Every structure is written in C-alpha cells, then in structure tokens.
Amino acid sequence: MSYYESVFLARPDITVEQAEGLADTFTQAVEKQGGKVVNRENWGVRNLNFRIKKNRKAHYIMLNVDAPGTAIHELERLMRLNEDVIRFMTIKVDALSEEPSVLMQQKPGRDERPRREPRDRDREPREREPRERNAAAETLVKAETDYKEAQGDEA
Image (cartoon, rainbow, N blue to C red; front, side, top):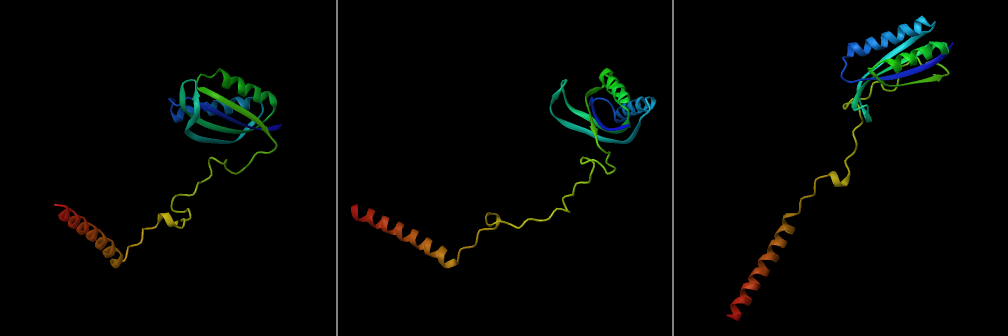
C-alpha cells in the first residue's frame, strides 16, 4: 500500500462537529476499501487567500492515509460529491510523518520571543544643556531688541 496526505476544505458555515463528521465519513470510506487513516488533524477555520465559491474562510482538515490507489479514488469521488467540501488535494508521499504538521506545531508566544535591542532612532532624544537653551533664548531676545530699536530709530 502507498502513503497519501489528503487535505480538504469544508464550508465555514458548518459546525466543527459537522466537519469532524465529514472526516469520519471519509475515514470509513477508506477503511471499507482496505486502507486506514493513520492520523487526522483539524486545523480549524482559517482565512483563504482568495475567494472560493464565494467563501472567504474554510475548515481545514488533513488526513494521513495508508491505502491502495482504489481507496484514494473512492475518497476523492466522495469529496467531489459532497456539497460541504469546497476544495481537496491528495498527494502521494514516500513516508508518513509521525510528528504534527507545521500548522499544528506550537508557535512561540509573545513572552518566549527574544527582545530586540533598541535602535538609535527608538531612544529618547537627549536633553539640551541649560546653557545651550539659554544661549538660544538670549539670541532671540537680542534679535527682538535690535528690531525694536531699528523701528524706534525710523519713527
């Protein structure tokens, strides 16, 4: 027998129990044909990259199957006939992986990620020395007095 990975997308408006029921139906069909479903993963409702049959989301379910080719043909026939299945894809693999798929592996949480060092532009601007601030203010006051004196001389 050969190894296959089959992923199908179910409509988002069905419940999780109905999506699991679809997976059960497909599992029974494979077992009737002499194969077995080694692993089943429910990836949950996820966003689609583009609309498929007017749907923006779908239930994703993956089946790892050890079965002959006739069982896979029957599985795909049932998926094509079912109205709740939007899309499906079955590929033949050399060996079935016993570890969880990439989507099911735990992603590091916010607390587990390493902190980045602040860049120069993220730091607070340095305070001016009081002397520098006073020098700028004195220049402004001097310019104002010079202007007023010039206005007084013209009048």
